[in-house]
Length: 264
Image 1 (spheres, rainbow, N blue to C red):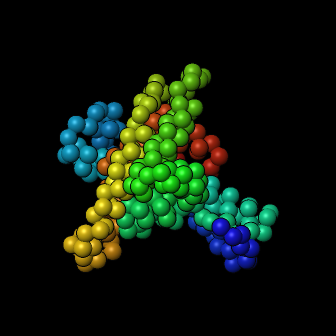
Image 2 (image 1 turned 90 degrees about the vertical axis):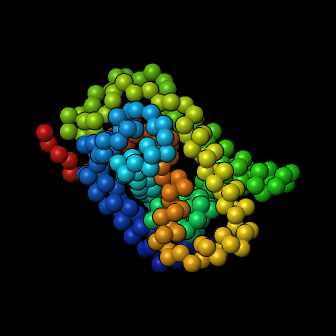
Image 3 (image 1 turned 180 degrees about the horizontal axis):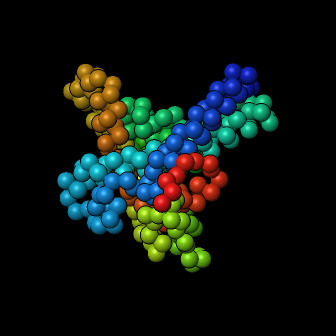
């Protein structure tokens, strides 16, 4: 698109956004770091396999998944806010915010993934995968291929961060003391998570053509629409979060922050 010059209002907004996101990160770390971001003793927290719909909808499991979603939203959002601020100051051009509070405000799967979650990466996938595939197939296939490409990229990240032999990790007694220092991430879970959400996106597009579904969605209060939207992904959030959280990636992030933690 056409470049737009950043105004003082844009820079001030990015600065405020980065500050708010940093404070939110510090609060979340202070609250949950001592539990390795899994404060509720769910089956997944105990590294047990979930085998039924009841397991996936268990309140303890959903609570941990919600914390996972918020942590990644805030961490990626902080990086995006700081990057946007630096770009605007150094180049003078306006930069988009990467996170637009998808967990709390998205009103549909397409709104969540297309307009709110990691907007910069969405733009790259749209230009690099969706549009080229769309020239030769339907929009449904192109959308699914974009999610598969995202899944492959995240599997690569898991491989880089968790599959190589590293020095043995020593868990701090007070920070991330629930960490399993011998954990080895399972490849494929990130791909499964993004493939699932690709199917959800395609399903949304198909159902969106139905007048009954359109009418049903328009009659619900906004908070219920947001809740139903997040529930299309939240029960499976551990498929995404496990490889990073259980190997201690968030504990590594903490090295650069000041926050409150419990001592003994």
